[in-house]
Length: 608
Image 1 (cartoon, rainbow, N blue to C red):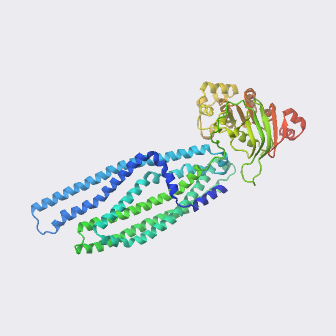
Image 2 (image 1 turned 90 degrees about the vertical axis):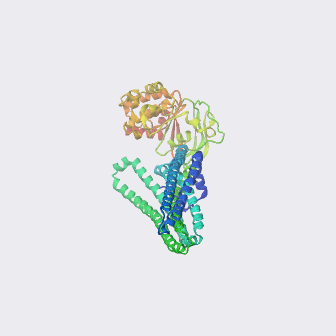
């Protein structure tokens, strides 16, 4: 289902106009390839000149080689021989001109591909780089499928314009200008007669511009919703099957697809109405030329060769118009996609480094929250997730965060990692405000294990080095031995060389969790964050991990979110949250003695 922000975005695009600034920004991605592009345009002009020379050669052959013979009843052998030599010479020139045009086109195609594909690759890299820098609030409110559509199908739709657009536009305009000059040169009156079809052609082009722009923007918006629905269904396929939602989801997808089909047909109808209409006008102009031009030949005002060349140039006159209509059709589709791509690229991360922000030094790990308040949306109507959060964690100590679901535990560690910015208060590490320093220097000294247990495709060793690529294999194995996960990894089919499938599908949930814990340890962070890090580990495996965690916690500041008693009981400090506030704090024993929320939670856990 589309979010409110997604629908509003589609409506904004549907009302936008085709702006020159948008096209300039799009074609700016071709600047690194301007040498190939300039070469392409020069070759385009030469190929166009070659094309325009063809009818001229035919006219010369008819008027100077064939016409003298056709006008004579009896021709001498010498005259016939001269005519044959003339025809052969002109045929050779015509063939040479064709071969020249063919050679120019081959090089032109290569330079077009170099320019277009290079620009598309650069744009795709820019989108991927920007997506990685966006703050989590963007992903909270935007469908995954829509983001994929921007980086995939929207960029693919730019191929025609970026690869062939400049060359085709120049070729069409140069051909059109050359044809008009040559047609007037052959017969100005006949050229004026052709102008009879220009008013309906102009009206038709304006109609195509208006209707085509609306149709393609509507089509692209619907396509994004279709991809979003498909991506969502694939991501949640287990839930879909578990709740027997296949038929209902298919019904919804079929409805979206029917809407997409209707809009695709509407856009195709616009294009395939325009092109045949241009062809009809071309046929009408040809009929005018043959009728009026034949009369002009009888009057001696135009030669037979001139009429033949005029008819050929007339075909070249409507060819560029049809080509520009086709190109404009592609341009409309590309513009709709470019608007969405640049809207993504123009989205500023909510969390970003201040200008000239310094790196954090190597941290000791003293963490303090000072009156922190936070809500996920910045609108005043949105509820506060955290209010007046204040606590201090001495360097090297372990703090546990407990509380009911939705009490704000995960929000606290998300703020510490600067995935979001608080709207009130300040967060400091070693007395330094983290908002005044670079994100990268903070994240390099943070290790995090979340409930998602996300693994990337690649080997187990690749995944364990994800947070510290320069780590040696020996360091990884040593970390796994210290943590107690080495034996589990060795039991995998190929040990550390085992290939992880997409989303870690070939390892169990417990194994995924053990691997993500090891990954965090290999990164050797100064501050360690565990968010339900043992939730998918059985009791026997958890006992092995707890001993290792106890040793590892002594060397770094640790914040732990957990419901299990065994995970939090040895913490130096336990913070109990409820409705976004810290309602209790103390050690395990002191909180049990106080008989508050923590004691009730633990009693409930014991009963279950």
